[in-house]
Length: 125
Image 1: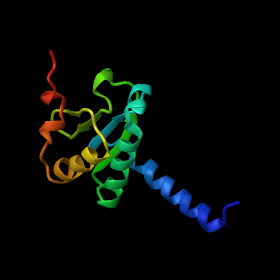
Image 2: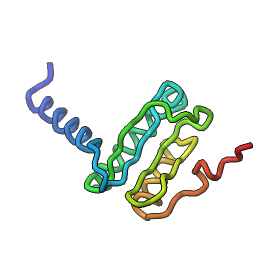
Image 3: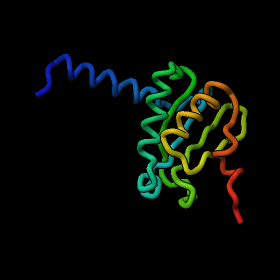
């Protein structure tokens, strides 16, 4: 059995995470594909990394991290989509926690798309 303090801490942490996922079209939305193909490819650690870094970097007032089902590009999983108000959607492919951390630093904080990780950079034939 957990102590009352431990339960309060867990509740506060979960409420902060749920609050991050709230839909607000003035926010940048970061969406991770969490269908079976995404999870099998490693999307769960990517989602965790993004969520944790957005909280640690105090970005929750302008960035919402959420998950979705199948994006339809299974061969490119794990997939992360970044949707900024007034900007075209950026689709990052074959992500891992290290790439996700770089996207937070360079794209979400620095404002520069990490082109090497985008769908546009894929050799699609």
